[in-house]
Image (cartoon, rainbow, N blue to C red; front, top):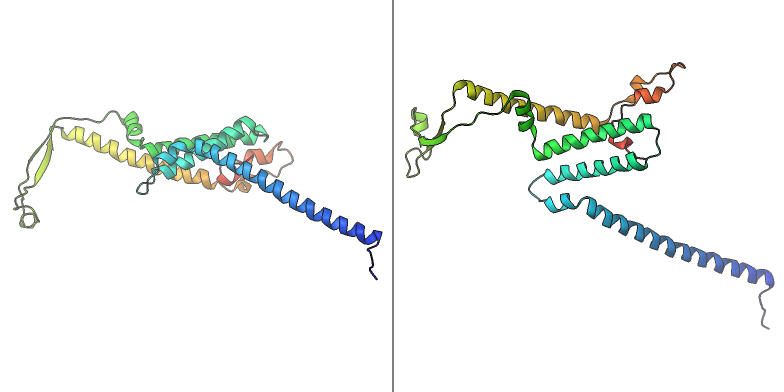
Length: 222
């Protein structure tokens, strides 16, 4: 004798089939939407980082700095144009991001020599030529190539000692500026402990806004 399922059993089966169908439909729709979002974002990122992608080579770090520079600048534009954060903290973020982008550009394009010239004046240039190098000591005479078929040459110039000293100051200052900006960059990216300057007084209108200086890569989002 064949037993047919009752109405209650049929309703339960229909419910299970409906749940399975909804789950499959959700997974398919979600997967498609996620793929379309990622693909659209992928194309957008290719356009934003196109110059860094084109300039990247496996023997130089310049493009790595370029990726960071372009990425921070993209976040800055989004926060500045579409951000919903209050202006007192948002503006501080924008200022720090602008400074980070400027430092990265200075490092990547090696602008420190020009910055040093702006401070100390233009470098002195003169005529240069090469003269045969004559070893003075026995140690120099024993150096490889001193008496070979490929003689050594020494570069000469017509700069005065004062001009050479001025040029040395420019080179030293350029190295100093680069070192200072590397340190500043890492301070901006790392951020500071804003709780140190947090005012707990009830008289302060915005204690957090006064303590926060806008630095900290992890805080640059909106």
